[in-house]
Length: 130
Image (cartoon, rainbow, N blue to C red; front, side, top):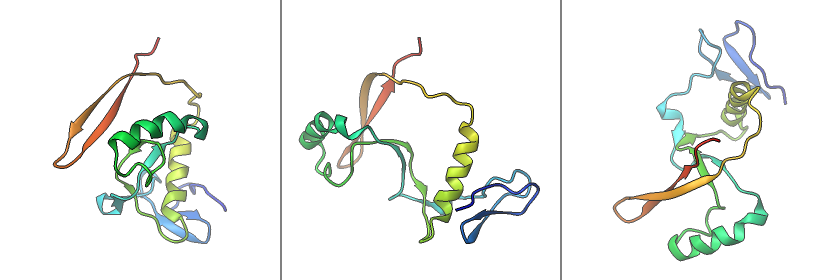
């Protein structure tokens, strides 16, 4: 698998196929039509932390077995094809954008929710940085 952004090129190579990129920036040119509501970029806690999270979810989320414990970072996210081209191209963009960002710890200060017609979404509020 070769991932990269060609210098001044029109397309980004990912495995055997290409993904369209913007002429000016070299960044893939995704649009709203490339997003899918069954796709998300998520933060997944380590499996050894799942039990207490799943206990709470079992009480309040009828679909808790459908999805692993997670925090949505980007939703909706890209739809992908059978060869993984959009995900591979998105990984390149994310890797380049996050180059130089050191690992960090995030603590949750509180949580709240907002209601939908027949459900609600819980959101987490991170603690202020020290």
